[in-house]
Image 1: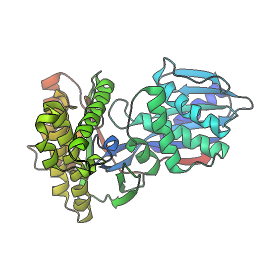
Image 2: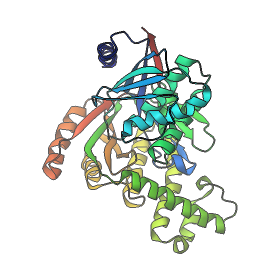
Image 3: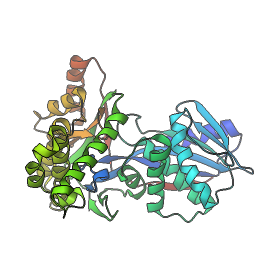
Image 4: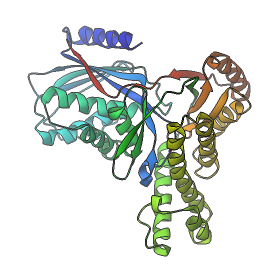
Length: 389
């Protein structure tokens, strides 16, 4: 699949520009084993890069023009680096403009031609946006010898999303896309950006994503609302517990004691955050001793919190998670990503994937009239330079 994507992207570059690209890069999507909506709450997350990619075919220009070709969308955008870069009405362009806007201060003075294509499903919560941002930043760093570290690249991707896209995202998606390693998950401290790799040898189990094929329109507004709610909650907690600096300094009792002051909605949001920070710690211990039943149980607990307390799930995803709970071959399942649609991530016994997919597909179609998509994923390497032409 990877080779086919590279050939596909390279051939389109040759067709458009009548020459071979100078360089090829791959930037992966990501999953998150556990630790959802915690990256912007100074907590811990446990993401990994996966074998679904954005491929970039790139050549330098002799002037300052940049031509972007989104092959899958059959769309193009051209601009001059000397222009005052600002958001435009094509959302996919903004992810790239936000990156290049920052790199102009790094003496990025020569333009380029870029064709990109993807095997990352759009709208499935696998962070195609982070792959796009980090892939472009990584490629520019390589092409123009900008001296950026992997951490710099991740932060540039995050800042692009804040400033040019309007989503106040945490650092997890970009970090996973850049720092991913084959067969490793990353326990990332979203406060200090310290990280630790854990072996992701699930032995007789595998990871299966069930794509609801829906993405409700209130993702962005709902995401930003949650950020405001937890920020307000933390302010209240700090007033009563001066020793608290971030949510990781909190415990359940602190939050429960302040239920009346917090109010019902903010109380539920804060309770989820505190519990989820602890669940990531517990999941790391489970991985260390290969206790996959414990890991699966923690994943399911996370979903209940996301659905009932953080309220970022939806009927379709709740159905997919509930439907697999009756299957002995499934250790755990939960919503993954920002919410309001996208995928569920399932820890399942190897060999039963196709049977499970068929069964849930029928049930899901009968319930919602929507065709389910399923992705068997493997944990892969982060953003990387593939080859010169």
